[in-house]
Image (cartoon, rainbow, N blue to C red; front, side, top):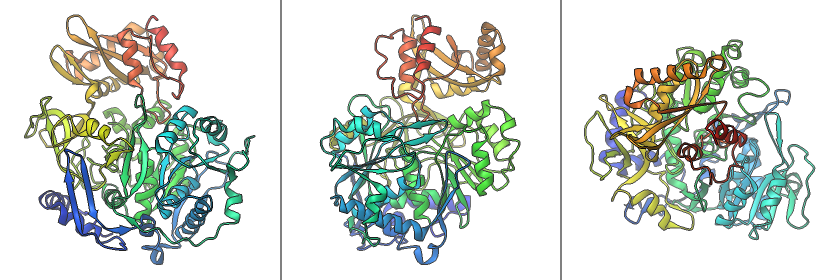
Length: 634
C-alpha cells in the first residue's frame, strides 16, 4: 500500500520528515487521494485564535475517495461484513459496488426529503450497515452528520439535535442489544417534542417494534428507497468544509460539539489506520466500537473504507448470548485484526478461560486497544490468551478532538511495553509541561501532555461556540493544544498516559495518576476492575479512595483480609505512598453505555457529597450507584 511504513527505520525517517517539514510530508501523502482541484497551500495555523486550515482551497468529496478512486480495483471486494446481535440471523457481506449503490441511493432519499449541502443531519441508529450508509450519504451530498450513540436518552438526543439545529433525523424502530430490545423510535419521538428544527424523520425497520409514525414528518427507510434513483453525483466540497459534528460524552451543561473537516481528517485517518494496524489486502478487520463514538467514525465508517479494507461490524455486545461471542465471530469470519476497549477485555477476563478455549483464534495477526490506558494484567491476558503470544498489541491513545490516533505502536514494528502507548505517530509533535507551562525536556519526566504543532485531523472548533474551543483546549498553555491528560515519558522515550489531569491525586505533595494506582490494584489476581479518586484528607491533603470490583473467586474472601491484600499489592508495585486510604468493595462501577467509568459520581461519594450526583439515568447500570452509596454508609 502507498504511504505504508514497513520498518522501525522507516518510521524514524517518516517521523523526522513529518516534524522537519510537515507541509511537504503531508502534501506528499495527500497526492495519493482524488481531488477535484488541488490545494493552493498545505497549511495555515495559529493556536491563539485558534485557526487551523489544511489543504487550503482544495476541492474534493470524501466518498469519491472511498468509491470512485478505488472501484475499478476493489469493486467486487467485500467492504462490510455484518454480524447480527443473534448468532441465528445470517451474516451480511456487502461489496464495495453494493455499498456504493446503497450510499448513492440513500443520498437521493435525503435530497428528496429536502436535505442540501451544509444541513445538519442527526443519526440515531443501531449497529447495522445502514448507519454507515447514512453517514456516507450525508457526506456524498455535503450535509454534516451528527451521530448520537443509540444508547443515549431522549434528553441527550434532543440536546444534540437542538445544538446542531439538525433538520432531519435518521433512526430505526428499535435496536437489539444483547438480551434487550431498545425502542429507538419511541425515544426519538420523546426527544423530538423539544426539537422544532426537525422536519423529517427517516425510520429503518429493524426490530418491528410497535411505533407511531407521525404523518408528514416520519417516513420509512424502505418506502423512501422505493422512489429514489441510484445515481447521485458527489457534491464538490472545500477541504475545510465540515464533515461531521460529534458531541463529547460526559460533558456537563450544554453538549460540546467537536467539529472535524473533510480533507485533513480523511488523509490522517487513512494514514494512521494503514500504519498502526499494518493493514494489507485480504485482511479482515473487526472493530467493536459503536458508530456513535469517534472510534466508530474514524476506524469503522471512514479509514478502513478509504483504505479499501474489509471491515466487520457487530450489532451486539461482548457477552451475549455467551461470553465467547467475540471469539466465535473472529473464528467464523477469519478476522485478522481485532480492535476493542480494555473495559471489554477486563469484563471477558472475569468470565474465565472456559469461554476462550473452544476457539482457535489462529487467523489473528494484530490486536488493538482504545478508549483508555490498558492495565498490565489485562494486556498480558489479551496477549497470551487471545493473541496466543504471537500478535502485537497496539495500545492506541487519541481523543474525539484529535480525530485519529496520536500515540501508538506500529504493529510488529514498534517494540511494545505493557501500559505504554509507546511513540507518537508521524506528524504528532508532543510536549510535556509542568503546571506552569514550562517544558519538561528529556526522558524520565512526568507532566501534562500538550501538542505544539497542528496535525491534519485536529478539531477545528466546537460547533456554534468557537470561544469554548479556545478556552477548553488552547488557553491553559499559550501556543499549545492541551490534551487534558497527564503523561510519563520513560527512559526509553516511551509515553504512558496517566489519565486526566483532574484525575491526578496530590498525596502529601506527591502527584499520583489515578490510572497508575488503578493499574497496580488491577494487578491483584482477585481484582477484576477498579476506579480510584481523590478525597479531602486532613493530613495528606488528598487521600486515595479505591472502588474495587472483585473476580468471582475474590468475592468469597473476608473483606478486611481482601482489602489488606490489595494494599499490599499496591505497596509492592508503586510504594506505600500510593496505598489506598479507603477501599470500597462493590459488584460493579457506574458506567456510561460506552463503557466509560463515571468517576465524577464516585468522587462525589468519596467526598461525602451525595446531594447532587447529577443525571444518572443515562448510565448503563444506574442501580449500582445506590449499592455503592449504601456500602459507603449513606
